[in-house]
Each structure stands twice: as structure tokens, then as C-alpha cells.
Length: 121
Image (tube, rainbow, N blue to C red; front, side):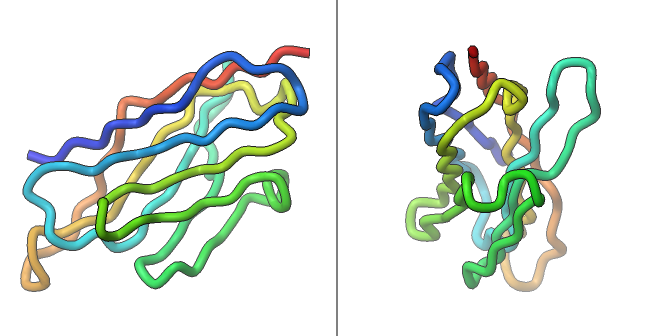
């Protein structure tokens, strides 16, 4: 069983920073791509950022320059550093990974339960 545990969400004021963490545990040997999505209140889930196993990153346009995704392969952990937060960044943030049990197994997509980030004016 694979579990993704997000942490680091909370209430902050506009202009402040937060770092989200996503720990992956369970019977996983290889974590390939990883990413963060968010779902603002009343809106659809959207991509925030993604990172490959080798560290290549991709960001949604509105997050470029403010958010930074990283990963620690030894710790099976993915991070999202969020700077200069804005009220429109308020959302539930979800971590997701593409992972496989071994190099001979197919990969599957796993999701965390989400962590709420609220940015006040």
C-alpha cells in the first residue's frame, strides 16, 4: 500500500511564504514524476508544478518565479516552496506521484489527501 502524506499547509497573509512537503511511504521502489496540483474553492483542480526523477521542472504560468518544486529521492519526499503568496493561491494542494514497485512493474499514479492553504489579504 502506498501513502502520500502532505504537510505544511495553513493560514498565511499575502506576501508570506509556505513550504509544503509530501512524503511517500509504502511498497514503492521507484518514484518517477511527481507534482503538485491545487483546487481553489469552487474551481477545478489545476497543475501547479511537476518534476521528473532527474529534476526537470515544469510550472503553471501563474506560479513561475514564485513557486519552486524540488524532491529528495533518498527521502521519497517532494517539496513545494511558495513565495509571495496571494489570496488567489488559496486552495487545497494535492501531491501526486507516478511510481512503481520495481523497474519491471508498471507505474501507477498516486494522490495525497490534500493540504489546505489559505492566504488572507
